[in-house]
Every structure is written in C-alpha cells, then in structure tokens.
Image (cartoon, rainbow, N blue to C red; front, top):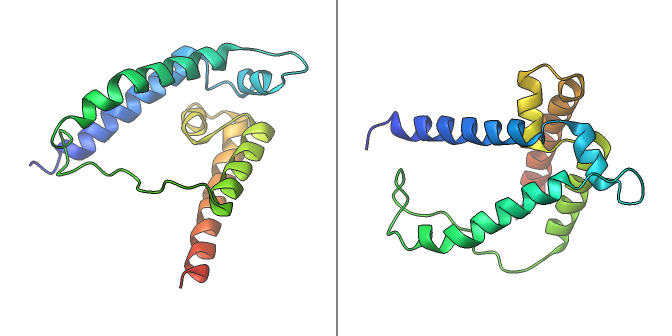
Length: 143
C-alpha cells in the first residue's frame, strides 16, 4: 500500500468533516451554546445535525464492518471496552463542561482556528494543554 494513501485519505476525510461542520453552522460557538441553553434561547439546529450523524452511522456501520478490512488499513481498530467506569464519566464530564463554557469541541475548534475565530484562539491552546495533562496523569497512574 502506498505511503501517501493513508495521509491523503485522512486529509480528505478531515476536509469533508470540516466542510460539513461549516455548512451546518456547527463552527459557530453561539449556535452550540444556544443548543445547550434548554431553558433559555434554545436553538435545536445541533439536534438535527446529531440526528443525521446517528442515522448515517446506524445505517452504514454494519455495512462497513462486513468488509474484511478498511480500504486503507490492514484491520479495523475497534474498542473492546464494554463498561462505563469513573475514568469515562470524568472525561465525559470534563468534555461537557468545556463544551458548555466555550461552545466548542475539538473538530469545530480546529475549523475555528483556521478562520482565526477569537474563541478558538484561546480554546485550542487550552485543549492542547488538557491533552498534555491527560497524558502526564495517565502515565503516572499506569501500573
């Protein structure tokens, strides 16, 4: 398999994802915060985007997994974790808090950084520090 195919496929998938975020308006933190403000000025747009993503996944995931391997890899890399633990709940809570405070999650933040959004200019460095901190804590708590 050519060495350029995997990075090219990743670039193409990332560009398509970013385009989808931009077209759906999900790069606007105010739209996300409006979705999270269920008792105020609620904006249901994200609900429709999420619904479309869930429906697409439900329809195509089993079809894709019937293949012997992905197009650009030797095998599928699926998680074997089947339980909910404190680590997962803590990570989900931290993600939700950051999302609620900033109106960004990683994908839209990177798109926002590309257009020099003021929110993304502080969010992305904070996200990178959080990722680094996670790696430090994970290494120190590993047996």
